[in-house]
Image (cartoon, rainbow, N blue to C red):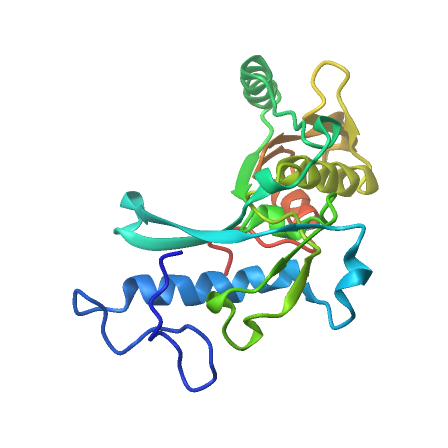
Length: 236
């Protein structure tokens, strides 16, 4: 794991030294930010290790990237070593909207003069409860929690069921809002609505992994309702 042993601050977290190897803290700050955001995926287990007999022990590692379209922003991602878990294939499948469905979605919106709005869910998988029973031992990137046993409680990136867990989470959310999955494409959701002039029509929501698009005369309100409990990228 590419972690510098000197990156602890006064509180014990890996927040970076004053300068990095190139005179900046870009990578160190990226790691600190990721470990802060991913912490919600873990629950400290203070009991005996035998209590985790029904869980599988895995590990995790950091993956690094440079976002060329975001002014070369440094990105660190903590990823579970999901290959170490014997996850049944039935728990890993996750569908996405088809290409034809995307075209029809936009066509229907254009023909009916319906507003379109889209968003990308921030740390999408971490908003969903995990389907697998796994745990890991915290490494040095966890700061003061290093060495502790952590139960994974959210759909951590890298787990085989992460995408399916998030898709199921979103399906339940849309169902609660009154949307029903289309028989032609399970990732196109629809709900009867009424325009301001009294005309009846359907509102639509399309899911493509962590991307959400809605077509409605009150698109912003629909996106707000869907966003309850999650956070969109670049959301103020």
